[in-house]
Amino acid sequence: MAKKTPIPGPQWFSIKQACGYLGIGEPTMYRWMREGKITYRKIGDSTRFLQEDLDALVEVHPSKKDATRVREFCPVCHGTELVEGVVRSTGLIYFQPKKTKFWTLRDSNVALVSRMCAQCGAVFQFGNVEKLASLRASALTDVDEGEPAAADE
Image 1: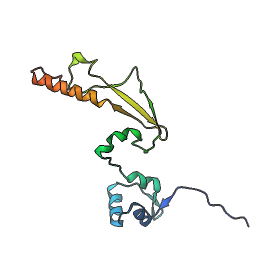
Image 2: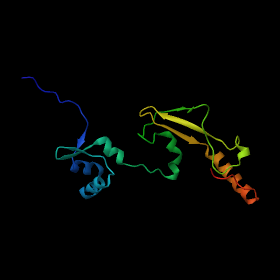
Image 3: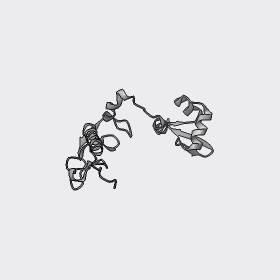
Image 4: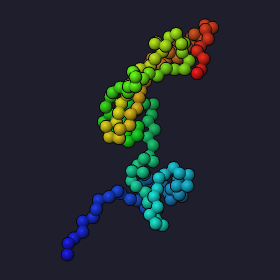
């Protein structure tokens, strides 16, 4: 008689196993299920969780010290292989703060750095915070000197 080889599949957790994996109690798990905070699946009368759904529940809250590291990993899948590039439409895409003078349009653009995760394909962008700070400071001094700031669109 031939020996059956198990078919590899996703890692399923029961409610008790999921609670142990996350280090929480069953009442918390049931509350999260009611509130829609956790993804679960019903297989007949049985409730099951995929390991990837349990892992997605864990949120990372970096400290201010680690805020600069946020550019080093994907915010979606936490992958570390990021490819830097440029997002294009009919040209470069810039961020422009709302309260800047219209005649300084060229100077008020903040260039964006784009990165794409090589694992999940998420594209995210970062702006130049130093340039934004200088624009905000100049907008505040213009208002203090009596010049009206540009109207919100």
